[in-house]
Length: 113
Image 1 (cartoon, rainbow, N blue to C red):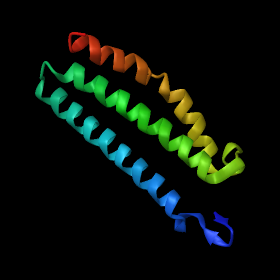
Image 2 (cartoon, rainbow, N blue to C red):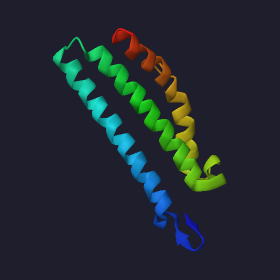
Image 3 (cartoon, one colour):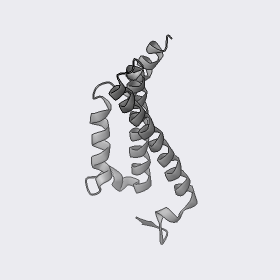
Image 4 (cartoon, rainbow, N blue to C red):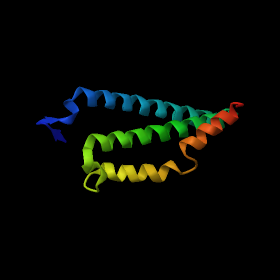
């Protein structure tokens, strides 16, 4: 998308937002991989890590969708661009097998709080 005659990716403020989003996605990815490793090993900490991964992935996905819609402007809410589809998917998948708040609470309970 272009704004003010420039590609929006050229604006430093948007680059910072994209970098932050990338780091959040990488953290969620690392948590998911660790949860898979613990599940494969049959670890007793697997339940805890699965909830950490689900909570982190849910938060990262929600942030990605919000940032994507914001960067696209009003057209991001329409069906013209894929970001609208991703927003709908995020809303549907957020509740699948517990949302991020359910899993954050589960992490606290499994940690003894």
